[in-house]
Every structure is written in C-alpha cells, then in structure tokens.
Image (cartoon, rainbow, N blue to C red):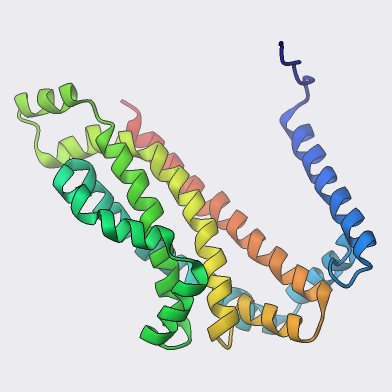
Length: 256
C-alpha cells in the first residue's frame, strides 16, 4: 500500500497549521468543560499578558524557576556527561554504573521530590538537586551511546598514530556523541522543568510551581493554565537560545 504524499507546503505553513489545530482542540475542550476544568485560549492569553506585566511575578515566579532549572540542568549535564563518557570508554565502568542509572531512570518524580525534601529540606537547593538527578540518566545514556558508537578501527588507528587523549577526545569521541547529546539535552530539559515545577508545588515558597499551587487552591483556572504556558515557553526559550548555540558550536567543531 502506497502512502500518499503530503502536500507541498512551506515550513511556516506546517507550523501555522499545527498551532491552529492545537488552539482549535483547546477551544473545543474549553467549551465542552464549561471553563472550570479547561480555560479558554483567549482567556488564558489575557491572563498570561497580565502576569507578564507584573514585576512581582517575574521576581517571585519566573526568574526563581529559571535559575533553578538552569543550575540543575548544568549540574546534571556535567555529571551525566562525565559518567557517560567513562561508561562509553570502559565496559566495566558501564556495568558498575548500571544500578545507579537504573535507579535514577525508574524512580517516579514525586518520590524523588519527597526524598529530596527529606535530604535537602524545602527551597532552592532541593529543586536544583531534583532537576540535576533527573537530567543525569538521560545525558549519561546519550553520551555513553555516542562514545561507544566510535568504530574500533578508528580507535586503533588513533593509537597507532600516537594521538594524545585530548586529540582523540575532540576528533573521535565528541563528534560521535554530539548528536545524541543534543537530543538528550532537549529531552532532559523538558523533564527537568517538569520535576522543578513539581518540587516547587510541594516544597517551595517561590517559583512557577508555587504560583500553580496558589492558582489551584483559589480555583483560578485561567491563571493555572497561564502559568503552565509560561513553563512551556521557558523550555522553548532555553532550547532556542542555549541549546541552539551549543548545537552551532558542536557543528563548528565537526567541520574539518
């Protein structure tokens, strides 16, 4: 059976069609739910504009969450990348780290938050820690797979020509790991934002999660959806700036 070809539409047309379809489904759900369970798109956007116009929301809601997510993400990338590189180079290290990777990958987010509250108390340190712990296994797997994918013949050739460890790292292993690493960063960033919001909802007095908890307690559905939309926009912003710059840097590094 031949799969029919999609119409030849520019990229911006597909993006626009996807956004319109999403907004249409959102509006249908809002009308069907009566506005209590699902806020209408226009009402959510008006609430969002009002929140972004408040200086207090930036200082006590958006910026604390952004700082915690970036700190935890950076820490998780550093630890996960180092452990993933070690595991990709040595099979024994991979087997040694397998239990740790399995625990961090399989533990539910709410359990991780509760344990972090016991270990670090409530506040910023707890949120940064759970973001880092959620990022580590994703980056670990990405870097390990990238390093392990380097052909054994290329490794032997590098040794035969006497390339130093630093040269082998930049010429062989980092280019091989760059694509899975960037994909892992995108996935880890979204997961880190989710656990950060969860941690702030359960154990913080500032941040987007705390704002969500207040909106839920007050049954302010438009504000709840507006804050959720802010969290998604934050992930998109970081992905469009930080990760895009990192992607360009890695591509320049792969250019002969």
